[in-house]
Structure formats: structure tokens, C-alpha cells
Length: 387
Image (cartoon, rainbow, N blue to C red):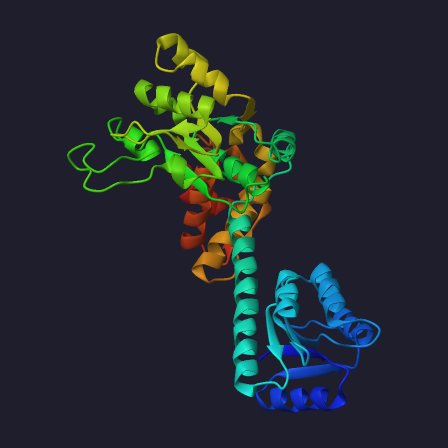
């Protein structure tokens, strides 16, 4: 049930609403004017506000505006005995959840409150999910190398500059791309990822740009490509060094003109996409070999972020190990295990050819195979032979 604030200058209305809503199981506070209502609102956590429009000193529209400034996610239902279309429209434009005329229809009121409660619950669940997602993609570490990466992300993310992320496999290039998106002005729009190495060269163009029905044998219907799916947001081209030269030419055109055309069509489609690319290859060497277009490289590499391998940030292993310990144990529904100092020392001695991804796998292995405590002896027994 919800905690509801009722703001109305008519005592009979206040008391009636309080009695009805408390019978329904809600907790209700009442205020006789706008000033008192705002004071109560500031001092308590309310899920819903019912506010009269015609009140002395401060009318309901002014109260609504102040409530929206403070907590825009809290649904405000406006009620009035002098309702008209213009008033209702103004209230909704100002951010009201609904508008109900007096005398109040009890069924309508209860349905509105139920809908407002559902909205509040959905907003809270969405925020919780976003926090979990952000935590899952957190960039963990305090080493100088990783601090530099975070600083570049903070500086570059708010712009639309294209970014090329380099570094060995398993270092966390995808995390950098996701944080560039999350901290950008495009954060509310799609983040679309394409692994260029995982898609056969003959299908990469269809994957990126879409195709028309009948464009090739298996094209049984029209399909939007990743560029269109990412419109307004961010397109992450992972392992771009493995992209075919023909696809590279089309990507270059898309970056130059902000237009694409589906396979089997000569119609141009405008797209507004920020492109972030990543590779574990040395693209300058690939250019010399004729495997990568130099003009595309210069288009992609406005900003270059190099993600360091784990061997260059060993001081981050304690934080990373604990982060993965908490994350994995949470996924398994068990309490986090204790990682002893000698276990950390042994982890630092290992050769992390698979970088952060490999460290996570080792921590997961240790969590599964060890008891409540992970020791240096455990690391020697279960991690070293698999490195």
C-alpha cells in the first residue's frame, strides 16, 4: 500500500479522503493548504499526492510546480470542483499524473491511485535495475593506468566524438564503450553492439545496414540493420579490425554522410548514430598489410583510449578480486567469501594472459571449489595449473 499526501483546503474533503483511503490500506497525511502540504512533503516520503487546485494563498498548480521541482517521479493527482478542459490540460502539461473533478467518483479515484501506485513501483524497479546494470559494468580499479582511462571517459563521453578503444582481449574494452554511452547525452537511447569477428564476412553488411526482402536467397522479409536500431544512440563496433574491406567502405560512407542504404536497396536512410569502435589489433600494421582502410581509421580514431592489460595494473587485483567475489556470490545467492592476503599475493604472481576476463573466471572457480575462505594455498591448487 502507498503513503499518500492529501492537500485540500476543505476539511470535509480531507477527512473523507483520509477515511476512504485508510480503509483501502493506505497511509494518509493531510494538509489544509499548499504551504503546509509542501512542508509535509519535504519531511516525509510519499508515493502519491492528491492536491486541490483552488486554494487560498497558493493554488494547486503552483504546488504542483514546486512538487515537480523537488521529486518529479512522485505522481500528483489534481482535484477540483471548478474543473474545465483548460485547467485539466494545464495541470497535465505541468506534470500532473491525472485530473479528477469534484464531486469525486470513488471508483475513478481508487483506479487512479492504483495506476499511480503501479507507476511509482515501476519507476523504483527501473532505478534498481539500472543501478544493478551500472554495477555490473563498473570499471574497477585505482591504478594510475585505469584512473587515466576513467578521466578520458569523463571528458569525452558528453561529446559526440568517435572513439577507438584499443587493448588486448579481456581487458574490458566493452566496459569503456558502455560507460562512454552511459555518461553521454545519448544514455536514454539504444546502445547496440556488433561483434564484427563473430559475423561471417558475407553477412556483415546485412547485419550493419539491414536488407530488403529478396535481396538474397535467405532474405524472406525486410530487416533493419544495427545502424538503424542504434539511431539516436550509440553503435559499438567490437573487433572492427576483422571487418571486411567492402563493409569498411560502407561504414566509411555512413560516417561521412550520416546515411545508409539497406542491402538490395538504393534508397538512402538518414541515421544519427555515435560510433565507438574497439580492436585488439594494431590497425596501423593492418593498414600497411592492406587489411584496413586508412581513411576509415582516421574517421574512427578522433579519440583513442588504450585499455591497459592486467599485468600493467597488478595493484588493482585486490579490488577486482573482491568486486568479482561479491558479484558472483550475489548471482549464486550465497554470502561473499573471504579472500586472504596471501591469496591476493598469489593472484598477483600469475601471468594473466586473458586479463580481467580470466581473473573473473579464476575467482568464480575459487568460489565454487573453496569453502568460506579462499587462501593462497587454494590459489596455487586451483588457479595456477589452469593459467
